Length: 116
Length: 106
Image (cartoon, rainbow over all chains, first blue to last red; front, top):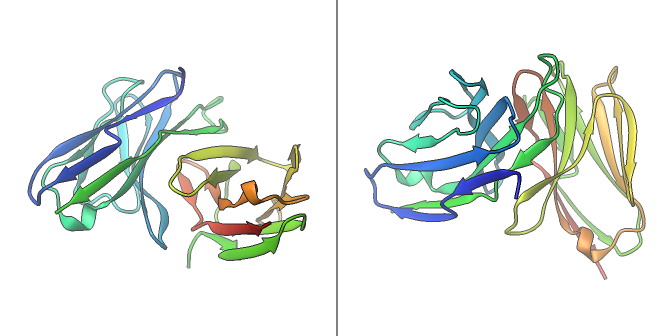
């Protein structure tokens, strides 16, 4: 099915381990982004990308790396996991029109990460 | 100050009531989104607005660009409408409000 595919859905890590959350979309969207959702905090932007080869930091980028080598994929890397990174992570994508980001938002199903 | 403010944070109402959720923002935007998240569930897009008003079933969304304000209305509310409703605004990136938790009692 078309849309945003996010994996894994659940992951448990030990402090200091590394992992990558995968996000792929098949809608040829230019805008892709990663958010974390914590109780009482709402969705907070980690990193975003407005096209292949272009990434930028959001509100809470520390401890996370991203890359955008293709239009379809936008992986989020945790190089050395910390308990503060325990959260639910969402990937989202959107189209643009003439450089204006006016498309509907599409979300992945979310990834629940626990760091012990 | 948060760039996107939603009110109320929590709302409990009886089935059938008319519901209004408000969103105010302080930045210039190209569009505003209303999203819905059921408990433990994913996030789905309800509306995307850049001006005026949109209607989908029992849901109505309005936006006033000059006042930097948007409202989401639910008519004839139903327990299945119980969810968190999130306002998001976008320019070069997308910024979310903290959400409004709605609980409709049967």
